[in-house]
Image (cartoon, rainbow, N blue to C red; front, top):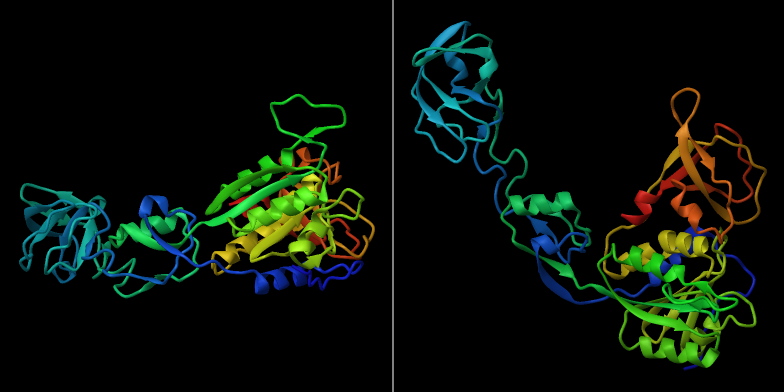
Length: 412
């Protein structure tokens, strides 16, 4: 297959533009499966889910106390006879005018009652209750459909199910849900210098930490992971590995080999079997990220430095993988924090500084850069709180409010 590469060898694509391009062009998978509710966390809904019932399905008491008609308590104190007891799971008979019923949290409100007076505002006697505080219709009553109305749109197609969503689905009696099938992702490390953990290091080798970091992040997603091993610094082997993977995975992620060194063969291998649509971003760390296709398989080439691989995966690749599964949105959200440091203007790349969040002198929060900002210092990711976004050509002064993206947002 002849390459149809359209990328420039020197221009740097801004981060936002790269994300938009990938989001608009990445292929979406087809295939639906029905999964048990307990297996649905993190999966992407295939269709809209509407409520088939009201939740709660009946008016019920929000507190332990006494169910009554508010009209029977025009002045207080007033005493009413009590001749019935309603616990959760029971349905009491209709309440006669001028009477009260002992009721407990979650129990169905008897017909005729329109309020519950909490037991703390009552004095119980022999067969009667004395109400000590004013009562209004609706007091301490959860109306039918208070949480969910029958017919309500609960979750739209493309929604990624969270634990709280599972509870909502269970509350409407849903036992299984239609979701997109899992995305099949191949993970390939490249480089003669890489060794697997648990094996002795030979001279000039390092352990393959990128695979384990990326695999762990992928395991938080609805993904079937294929370990494609380590490709040597050899163009033909890299090409054959990509070609073989293209027949069994939806996307492949490589680490290393996408720069411009003599032993960086991934770009040439992709161009020999597909096309490279994006290469070199205006981002620091992570400039030599590549995106394209091998046959019909989406290709993402991450840099080999561990911080660069982490940052580009979290900010660019992870949202794209969710897009492939039809997710409505997966862009990491940040919020603004004041900088607790000064810094001269940077270059033409948007920077993502590893920072810790600490208290300032006023008791608020401030972002402080981690000492070692080298893209090879993978341990800095474990010892910092998240990424602080510094736009191109921007100086930073103490108090400047910059976007902070916590790692929890990037990895959830």
